[in-house]
Image (cartoon, rainbow, N blue to C red; front, side):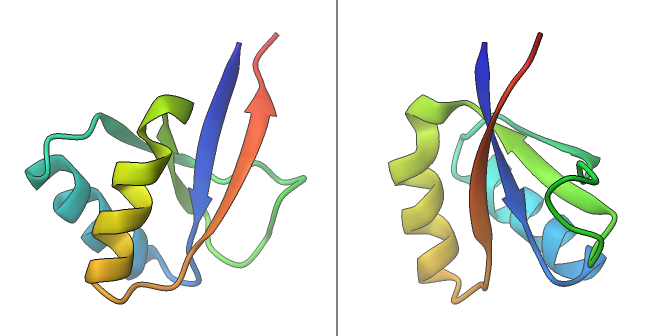
Length: 74
């Protein structure tokens, strides 16, 4: 199963993004950032790959800096 992870530079940004995306009706979850992706911020957002376009639109509109990665869950 593939899932998306959004990384941010700060914990504050991750929490702000969660509020923005939940208000937009997207299903996201704050999760610990996988170590293989980054050590900058300890929190990232997990999302369904099908929501990427809406997620990007909302985060871009809020002028947030982020990176998106995809991982496989075993």
